[in-house]
Length: 150
Image (tube, helix red, strand yellow):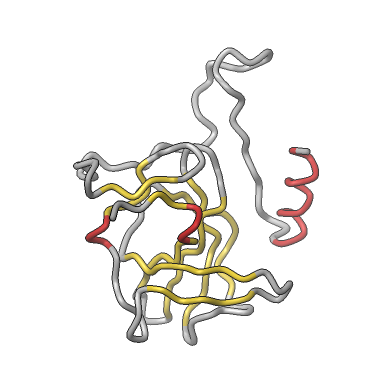
């Protein structure tokens, strides 16, 4: 299964490498440290404000990092394969890591290139990191892959 996922990502971005973490105590688990750097910043505090990865409960961002882009926080798009995503826009997401190089193919936001954004702990695909030619940036995170406080 992991090999199949890795092959899928290699087809999407040939220079991309995917790292998977073995559960603690798993046979063959090395003590060399995590495959992905833990980038959760100390300033993400307050569980009532935290937005979490639905898969592993890592803090991804904060509610007050949400932003409107083109007049809305929520956007619904379909990728070239017909998969529909409802995303929310966030100024930052310190709990995410990125894979692949910037691409402007099939960008949902004109003038922006994107990279895939993953949970920095469990590597679940959480959305995309967008960067414009003027260096404005934001995250488009898949809302049903997050735990968002009311």
